[in-house]
Length: 531
Image (cartoon, rainbow, N blue to C red; front, side, top):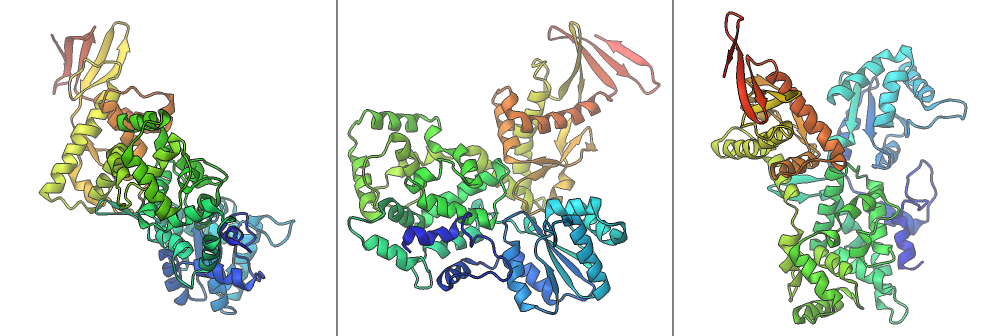
């Protein structure tokens, strides 16, 4: 096998992509595959539970397809063979005539009869299906599943370990980290004899005329820690902006695709392809970003205007990463994007760091962490208040009053009747006492805590897309059909607030933007009209 072929073990189409009980595999490929395995936080939690399991316990290892359940179950089924029963995949049945639900009914019945501990690998969707359609005789199991799905807790004999409770990405002091993905990349590219890919890379690198030059360049790029940081940021964007699940199998296939694709790594990242992560990441292509510095660079490259610094930069890349030949302007932008944190003798990409910054993402990270650590100190309270006043409340006001822009702060449009508009006043403020309730590790969203006229609203999940929409609304943008999902959330929030406003003791009547009257109900129930 050559270098490209051996990398095939990473591909989702490889016969070694999924671990199955009793599989037979080439010893060298087995060693490479075993070396790729990383003990994650979710595995450590599983290990702790299984080492203390009782005969009357069921452990449900829950997650999404391809997240690594089968790898964990395969490993521990061998360690606990004969002591614990394992049901690897609850989406499968033992015979073609039985459904997955019926098979799981049978597995649970056996557990109750044998009084032997049981471990079940199951997708969250299948878990919900069983809670709805499982046998009546297993109501105890279905009830436990129902409670877990509602509040993610385990109880008594039923233990649930959920991959989503152990996120692969973290925000720490304003920085993104992904120990899992960083470790996974390192397993592929580390310059160490334990790395089974190393000798094949060195053989390819040592070739003269027949070397797979782009593959070599891509491997050298992926070895670079700063390039890895950029890739992790892109994967985070796929997760929080496109709501894209990131599983272990996807990540391995993703690494395979960016290394072995037909172009250089920086193009493979944004060209899409037969990988869900690549499809999501293609939407963040820096070459389509409209920025004056980037536009000027693309124009200069298209016109072949001489730039000594750029030529020096490309010459350094030829020596360092074996990137040769002419590139089109879009590829040059992508190249600078992935190298923008890399220390070079000629630090040409650093010129464009501001152009590549994503303000909503940076703000979201800061706000997520601020809500996460909030304990009420004055500095945190000041930052939180500024965020709610300047962005959240301004966006709510702008969206609620888009049909009556003449309304002043704290006035909310309710309805129109011919030439007349009806509005009311409502005071929005931060629900300070609720801010300390942010206890989720889920980086996909954090909760807004708002009071309307001193009444506490239910927490409102805010994700990066809703934050970006709020920033746009504050800047004067009018949402359209392309903002559908975020507009629905913002619209629901405004509806909750205006429903409170419609119950207020006073209403305002406007015509052509001019206030005609104020209608107020006094303590005796009488209506007073003024104006």
